[in-house]
Image (cartoon, rainbow, N blue to C red; front, side, top):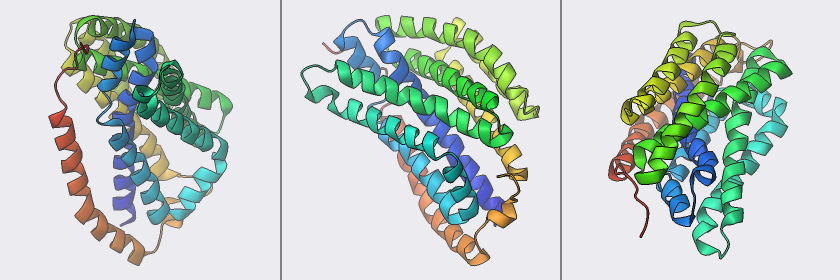
Amino acid sequence: MIDLWFVIIAFLWTGYFVLEGFDFGVGLLAPLLSRNDAEQRQSLHTIGPVWDGNEVWLITAVGAMFAAFPAWYSGVFSAFYLQVTLILVGLILRGVGLEWRGKVRNPAWCDMAVMVGSGLPAFLWGAVFADLLFGSAVAAVLGGAFTLTVCVLHGAVFLALRTTGAIRRRARVAALAAGAAVIPVAVLALSKLGTFPALAAMAALAAATALIWRRREGWAFTATAAAIVLSTLAVFMELRVRPLPGLTLAEAASGAYTLTMLSWIGLLALPFVLLYQGWTYYVFRKRVRVAA
């Protein structure tokens, strides 16, 4: 049960980083790639139907940690209280900016809130996990730089995949620039892990850059998503051995009865959540065009 719930939590965090990764990237890039309000709305409409659903993965991942590994949960969120608080501030700013943009006369402050609210979590989640693994400020900065650049690349490829016209062309250019930036950062950040998934993640990022150059947006998005999956896998392989200094996974876990009850709840609920979110992405799969 302990290993099962660790895998479930790793899966939930992976889903969060893959889905929120392009959300963050779009939020950061939209003001930079748009030349007028119509183009800004075109960019943000690509994530409009899904961004709040993507955040459910974070709520579920944190809730699962609290229930299955309370000592791990309390240790992580106590040690990184400031960083997590700033992440929550960023998510609130982003949510307010996205929801209020169409309801105010001057949406510029909403666009700034979305940009800041996307950049803070994109950087700080990488900093938190890198610090958790290596316990140094240098590692934290490098980890934050890695997740930030990956999110920008992931978001740029997503915009190229989901838009038309000028935004699509500019998103391709942004993806190429982000790819050139992320690869050296990935080498520095992931080489510290030294596992096969980390090396495969570097290869996936290089493949994504090559694919966007060849205008294969769908395959490029698959490659960036794979890079995030592999990077998260490499991180959780390390956390499996030592989730916190001086604490093993077995010591951090809840009792057998609690884990059994959680397993039944997860077995009943998780398939419906996955089906619903998959249906949502299917419904909103078409490209977004500039509004007339």
